[in-house]
Image 1 (cartoon, helix red, strand yellow):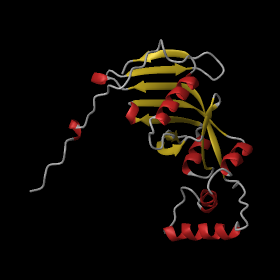
Image 2: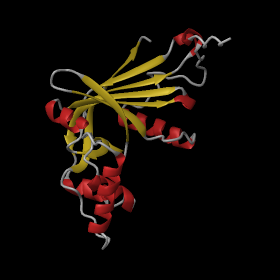
Image 3: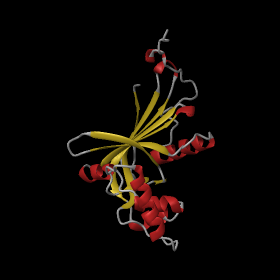
Image 4: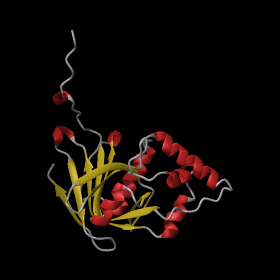
Length: 217
C-alpha cells in the first residue's frame, strides 16, 4: 500500500536562537548588515552570499532568481550578470529590485529594496578578471536567457571561446557587467518563538539619517 505523504501543514520549526531589539541595532543599516554578514560567515553557512533577486517588467510581472552578492559598501549591493539576460531587460524597463538573504542556521532574513544602476566598466572589469578562466570564457559563450536547442551548442560555443582566447588574454565582454542595488529600505528579521518574530525596518537613503521602526510579525 502506498504510504501517505507527509502533510505540509505539519512542517514547522520553532525559532529560538536570537532576539533583535530596535534600541540595540546599529543606527546605519549597512553597519547592521555588515555585523550580520560577518556572523553568517563565521557560522560557515554554505553560499552565505547567495541572495534572491526579484525584479519586475514595466507591466508589473515579477520574477526572481538566486544570484551571488559580490560586493557591498555604503553605496549599495553589487551582483554581476549578462546585460542581455531576462533580469537585465526587466531592470532596463523597471530599474528597481528587491534582495533577500536567508540564513537558516541563524534563523535570520534580510530584505533590501531600492533602485538599480550599472556599475562602472572599471568595476566590472576588476571583478571579471578575478573570476576563474572557465567562468570568464563562460560569460563570452553564453547568450544568457536565450533559447537553445541542445546543451551541445553551449559546449561548442565554449570551445570556440577557448580557442579564440587561447593566448590567455580574455577581455571584458561588452554585454556583461555589474549592477548595484541602491537601498532605500532594509528589513532585518530574527525568528522568534510562537511566530512572534522580530522585524526591524530601516527607511531612508545612504548618507542621511535612517528612520528605524519595529514591524509586527
